Image 1: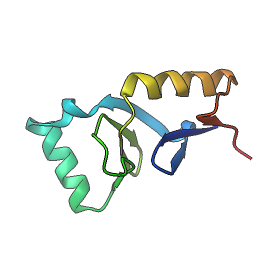
Image 2: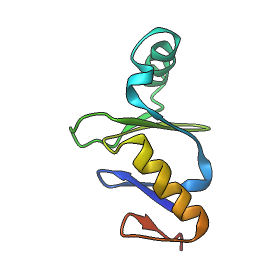
Image 3: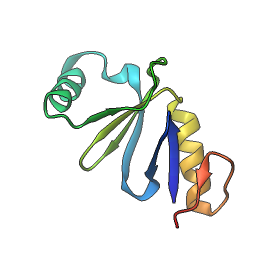
Image 4: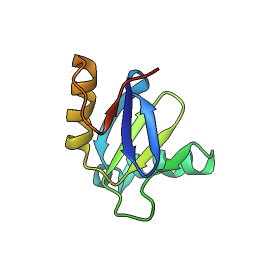
Length: 92
């Protein structure tokens, strides 16, 4: 199942390790983790210039979204149950 995370970006719900609030990564070791990912070019900004609200962590990339973590979590849960709305797309 594909999950719309903002901008023009969708990702497979199956590859998501975690969806977390962006502010959680604003300092300390968490910030160092994100800074290193930026240096390694493993961060994809899907905000289209909007406020950063959440991080979607996968095994190989980190996506930044302007959609709240709780909203993305609910969409991912719906996708897992086979319930789709306009923002949850079925993988072809």
